[in-house]
Image (tube, rainbow, N blue to C red; front, side, top):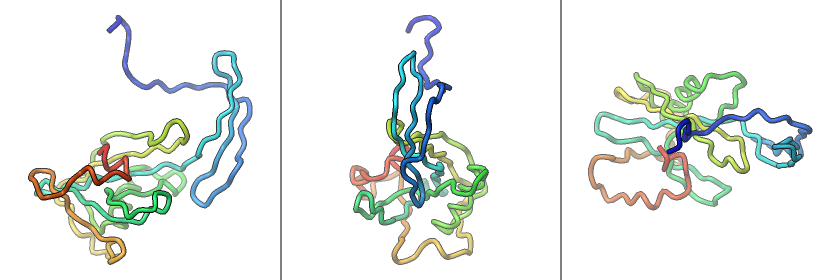
Length: 178
């Protein structure tokens, strides 16, 4: 590796010449921006997303909580870790993650750690997902609006063979990356 070389992403602040919302959606918009990149004007459309959180809820048996939800864009019932949108302006990602774990899985945890931030599709969306680890006795919150017959939950074992073939988790990149 050359001296002074660093392998890592680097935020860039380029001059935005023009920016407009070309489609306003229920959850996200599509923006068109023209920017100056090394003396050349480039135009790109991208999904303007509010951001999200995902939670790896790990219990004392080395199992993670998975929930099943219908995801229309991929026409599938998708097993995934609990997650939710950062759709409250100014909300701290940790506060959102704690709220979403209760809402989606009826769980609370004592210890929280921010693992990483994942840009899910950087070529076409500014969606950034904060991934948290929730440990120390994830337990039922007592609020039971998340888990229903239409949204089942499952503790997936990480430590032993249980017949679960992880190759079938093809629809949710955040769950796979976590």
